[in-house]
Image 1 (tube, helix red, strand yellow):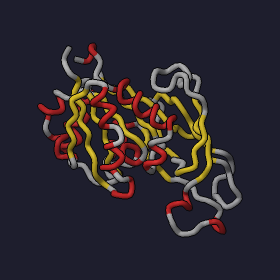
Image 2 (tube, one colour):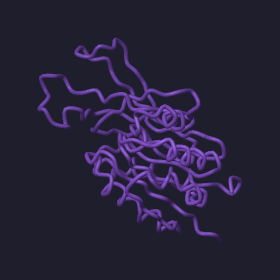
Image 3 (cartoon, one colour):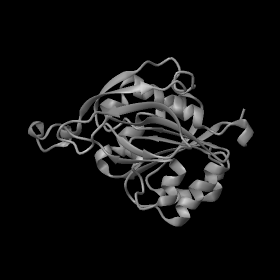
Image 4 (tube, helix red, strand yellow):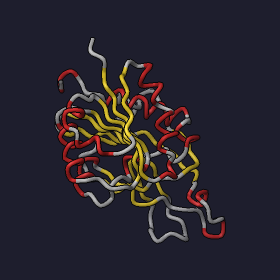
Length: 236
């Protein structure tokens, strides 16, 4: 049986600890039989031969920029069957200036609402809110999330702008608080998949810090997402 090849691409904003975060999952990939290559920039996306030979791309690159050549290489690989996955800002807040990247992924971080102003201390914990990740009907059956129950987190709660071509496995609801400008609760995707050509994409929005990534529910979703997104035989 041919060994699967995974490419881990990391970088961007250091606040999401791209090296430490991805190192949490490299042993999982190797234990599941993947040959893992790690790259510290998106330059590799322009290597069309390398991407054509890659079964799964795991990206952890928050913000940053991507060139047209790099994005074209990534997009072509996904269309041809290469899986694409990641978590939090490493995939849902990457390359904000690239509308074509947003089109590929299907959803984009907009904000993470904060605590009541009088409770804020001026650090990242101002945006750590208790919230529920709620499985959808599809999510209760999908291989990435089947068997999981709704779960609670206290961390950044992503508000995502998205299109209708994503398959939402879990959601989270932002309540309307007196200090916020919106007037009714807003429910947005927390975990979704996307079929793009022959490729599969999985986005998991929790994952701001290492402790969140080590949460059993979050980690399960990310790890299953890697396996599910990997190129299938029909895409070979």
